[in-house]
Image (cartoon, rainbow, N blue to C red; front, side, top):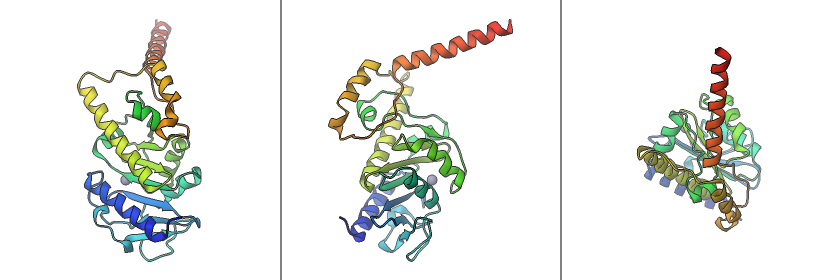
Length: 244
Ligand SMILES: [Zn+2]
């Protein structure tokens, strides 16, 4: 088992990477880790993730109250809400990477089945409805999705990823941002071509080889997208008929 010092080292390493990659600006973003005694380590409020020190990692209890020196992240309530919903989660990373946040600001989810690595590791990446940061409302909007997804877009805000350790959560953040960037460029080139149900089915069969053991939310395949379009067309046709 890791010592508290090792957990702190891991958090600092991930914070430096988040800052170096431009996933946060200034003092944005927050990271936390669950310790074996049921307490948590979180980043200090109002500090740049690129320059954090050991003393700027704050230990909090299950209510978010500081039990060490310093002031915890203002988003500690959101983190604790996720830990309550997901007992398997041991670390959480929240940031505002540009492409994924652009999707979140445009209120677009990342649920299309297009890239095998995303289908097998994250599945669909849903969009949680907008809520004011640092409020209970925000914890509730996340709670609607976090039980079935390890990565979420937060409308008009950013991204939250969870993991079995802080590096796992960080790598998911990297994947989300990479996927958002590819999806953006694919749309500039005329739009993504979705995988078929059959192709996605084959990927699910080999999911274990990617080290994925849990469930992932099903993404949108080309068949389901055609079905959705047909459903919308049928509904529109009926509405027009009703009007006539
Ligand atoms: Zn934020």
